[in-house]
Length: 478
Ligand SMILES: Cc1cc2nc3c(=O)[nH]c(=O)nc-3n(C[C@H](O)[C@H](O)[C@H](O)COP(=O)(O)OP(=O)(O)OC[C@H]3O[C@@H](n4cnc5c(N)ncnc54)[C@H](O)[C@@H]3O)c2cc1C
Image (cartoon, rainbow, N blue to C red; front, side):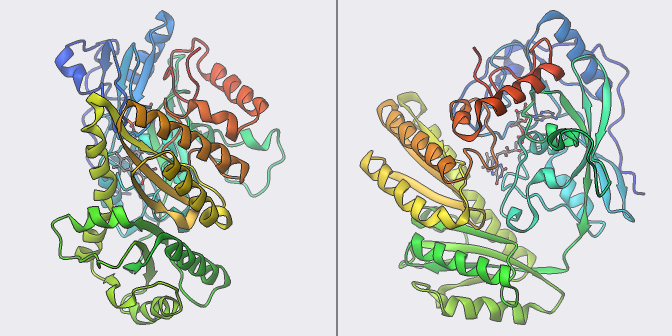
């Protein structure tokens, strides 16, 4: 067992110590969405008991409480419309690392990348990899069921969470753990694992204070590549071929398959970097594949073979990153895409413009024709600045629309709603990783039946009978 320094537990400060200084509160009014919060107070507990005491106090007095991690949400989920913001920022650090069983317990406020670095230093690997991993907290990733590029191989956060310690509105702190049995026929299958309730709960059921996760051995090495194509449809066809080989075995075995369209490549090309984006490229596919030390040769060969058969590929321009520095550089360039577009959108706030981001996903087989439909709808609506990038290996590209004023925003919102409705008709979802927050509440009717929605609301009432938690998240306030 490795015990990392845990922040000293402070003497039980009154959990109801609420900061109301407007200058301090200002920082908690914004996240990565274009919404503004309006908290009246801020609590920053240092341990689970303080969290629970604050929740019980608030519940007894009907004070709304919205939990936040590092406020990287793109949906306003960590913004309090009123009442208190409860920040987990003071609950940081690794609590326990069990090398033999490959598990770890981490405090909820820990920056995801810090946690990943700590386990990697011990030769272990935590797969969830949102591109915001330096800007989000572990608790936030559980609450949003975050995923990332490597979700293609490893699945989303909920697959890796063994247990959660949660503080509830009745003032208790309790551990919930995933059952470790092979078979179970007790009651409703959907509710047998209470941990899953908290994955994707967006602060509506309680506050996650610690997270226990499964780990893997750290892959010995991996290869990252950026393969260029004439256009997006050619890039998608290549992704389809890679997926097919992966499923059949014997060829490439990617751990991620990501799209970057022409605008995304422009943004990447504008960064201060040695990586050159070829002028003829209208799209690229970013891929990674793990391998044993010194065994990159056959892996590279398999990718070259696949590329040589791909229509519209520009194989001579392919960028291969085989060492850590080059790989980090490609990830940095990839991360510059949403970060740059967020800044661009922010510049139009005063005129009613912003960045509008989609998070829908469809079964991969539907993706290429569906993207062609989406592109046509955007063109018809006169939305000019559009970037398409992200997790196409999972049928999950992000469309980022930069709209300059309120009229364009309204037209774009209508197209996004149409995309969400059609994605669900095709068997997809309205949000595949960023969560519902306060911006997609209207789309849930496309994803769930009235019965499913009523069941979810009933679960919320059990955990939060006074209805104080995260007002406006998942369900619009009535
Ligand atoms: C540039 C950029 C890139 C991004 N890339 C990705 C990506 O690749 N994949 C992805 O999945 N997301 C991505 N995101 C979205 C975001 O980073 C994730 O949703 C992340 O999980 C949010 O974590 P956070 O700590 O910032 O949470 P916050 O934004 O503070 O809160 C998000 C939600 O979680 C709840 N919450 C937070 N902590 C707790 C807790 N301890 N207990 C209970 N509820 C809690 C809040 O109430 C809120 O509902 C990106 C965001 C940005 C800005």
